[in-house]
Structures are given as structure tokens and as C-alpha cells.
Image (cartoon, rainbow, N blue to C red):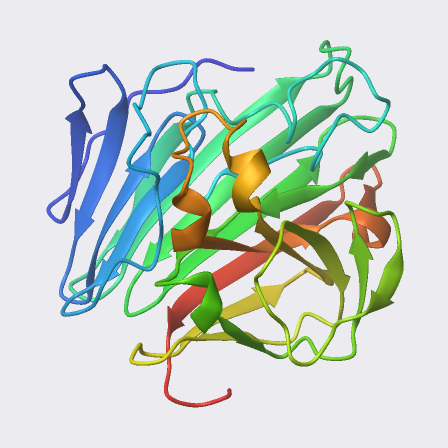
Length: 295
């Protein structure tokens, strides 16, 4: 990877260094407060004023250099899950602990925008291709992340990826999802394919890739404002909760954290992986926010 560049923050966007040595960008505008770590280009907080945080991070997270953060929105790139060839590379790609370049694109009263980027040189055996990956983050009344991959090389490559959003829940018993019923999903635990059930319940380990049309998905809980996830450039949505046994094996994750989080991830995974020709780009966008409607 290339070395990150030094940039200057702006009026509503400040750069901080944590006691553990990580750098993070803090955004405060008239709509929301947000936190973005340069390591991994990792969003850890988005809180519209007067509302709870729309992102979840484990209380067990220690925020250490060189260690991926557990929660928020990890960037999984250029592969999602294990390495596609079964090679001994980190799960979910190469960029989760890299320091990203960054710049302020816009710093308005109600909308703050940042761009972060990295380039690969094509010399890593795990991903022997020249490419640029950019993350454009917009903090406004809702949160938008746009992950743009450009093939800088002379040969095509296959891309799978995800914006691995951890969302807070009050209890697994309360979760209701709207927008997935009837779409086929791949169950990564069993290898089977079947239609998304109605009703859906979080009562066991869930690791599913829903192969859909990129339609909006709603997350409802009693007494909470309805949350939405909208996507572009994605026809796969990952739904994940580790449940009891797996929670005990995860790093920086409390044994009972499965009760307070659910991942709904905009992705290009499984059948939705994309091939990029030389010079071609593919953008993957996720937008998170609050709504009182189905739109």
C-alpha cells in the first residue's frame, strides 16, 4: 500500500489522536456527530442530534494500532470473508488495518464530506492487481458511505466486498426486518439456499447472504424510530449475528454482545461478486438513517 498523506482538518472536522495512538476524524455539524478512524477508514459512530447512535461498537474494543476494530462499519475489500483461493490471508481483505489517505471534500453546516483512499501496487500475492479504493463519507441527516474501486492494471480482477455495518439492537427478540421476504439467501453455515422467511427471528447464529435487488431494508424495534439501509451497486445484503457459542470465540467481543447488535451489510458477495476490466470502476454505496415511512 502507499503511504498516507497528511491533511489539514476544517471547521467542523477535527483530527484527534487517541491515548492508544490511533488517529480519528471527528465531525460535528448541525445534523449529526460522527467518528471515523484513519486505520481501516473505519466509521465507529454516527449519531443524529437528539437520537441514539446508529452504529454499534463492542465495549470490549481496545482500539489498538494494527488490530481491526470490532463494530462500526469495517471496510471489507478486495474480498469478503476468507481469501477466495483459500490462502492464509486475513478474513475480509487487506485494508482493515491500513492507514488511509484523507481529505475534506465539503464542510457545510448540514453536510460534511470526507474522501479516503489507498492504492495497491500489484505486488501482494493475495491481490496481485493494481487498483485504487476510495471511500467517500457524507455526514448529514443520514450517513452515506460510497466505496469506489478502480482497476488501474492491465488485466481484469474479481472483486467481492462489504460495508460491514454493525447496528445496535435492544434485544434479539424485538428485531423485525422489512424488505427481504421471499428473496433467496445463501446460508453460509449450512451451504443451502432458500427464500427469506416471514416472520424472521434472531434466535440462533445467523450468517446469510441475501441475493436481492438492492431494495431498501427497514429495521424495526418496539419504541424505537425505524431505521433504514439503502444501497446502490449492491445486489447482496449480509445479515449476521454470532449468537452464543461464536461470541465466545471472537476477539474484542463480550460473551453477551450478540444480544445488542445485528449486522446488515451492503455487499458484493457470492453471486454478486463483480469483475472489473482494466480502467473500469465499481461503486458500492450504503446509506443509513431514520425514517417513519417504508421508502
